[in-house]
Amino acid sequence: MVTIKYLEYAPYDDPDAVIDEGGRRVLGTRVLKGLHEGDVLNAWDYVLNLPGHFFFDGWPLNMTVTTDPSKNVFDLIYVKLWNSEYTVNYYLMTGADLASDTWEGALAPDDVHFIKMGSETFKDQRFDELVDGTAYEYPLDGLYAVDAYPHEIRLGTDAADNVINVLYTPEPSAIPDDAPVPPDAPLPGNNGGNNDTAEPEEIVVTDEMLANPVDQQEAQRTLDAYKTGLNQGTLSQTGDGMLTFAWVLGGIAIVAALAGIVAIVVWRRRKTDETKHAA
Image (cartoon, rainbow, N blue to C red; front, side, top):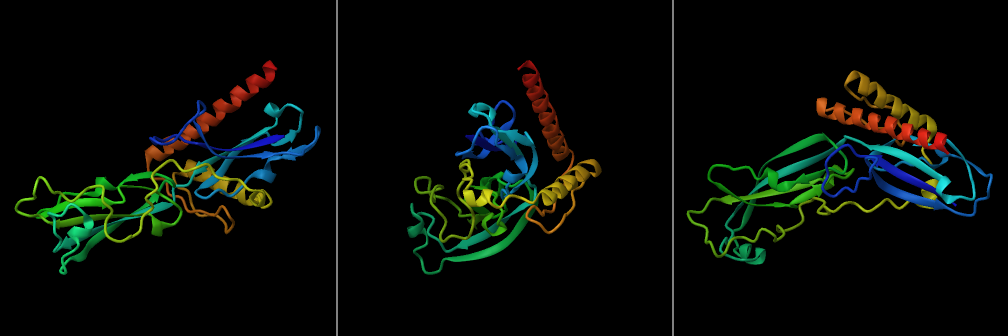
């Protein structure tokens, strides 16, 4: 039996991420059965294209299967891409009954209108980043921020799903204290946005995925582009394969994060070597 661990180095703060002592979180696992002692496996046969990530490192390169499952483990390390984007839309709602305690009641009048006041798009964001929608309820003169929908989003690979809508109304002279528009009520209609803010479930690694691993040359070109970008301060577009991406380093903080990943890799390999020598 051989276990393949798909791991991510996660040098960032995320309240929902479960990070192990090596600074890693588990993206997914796969157990291979029916193998025989002495079978030789190569790690590149199991490097997969995981959405929002690129392959960074892994060990061992070659494995000779033993009868001890604890020794039959591939650790394949990935890093998140910073090529996601999200959009915040700002709407003005007029004619609603703000004294109602439900959205159905608030929208009951015939003269309710929604006017899009503007939007802003944030690019080069980390895939799977948790974005707080309420942070965009900016104070605007003469307007009252009703709610942000969804309250939080996790950035996916499809920009069309990465949407937050902030709703305003003309500021009334007095808002009834005992009947505010409920903050936990969904906004009318689904104007986009992924409302699943929980830690994503582990990726289910299927036999079909394993049958179509990432091309080694494509993965190496992507990694080379990453290293070049780390040295030059920008990561540029590479190739046309499955791991094609466009990166922009957003400043010293990101460079520091990437340097942290390298430090973790060196530390992990040193500990692994020490364990092998001790054995």
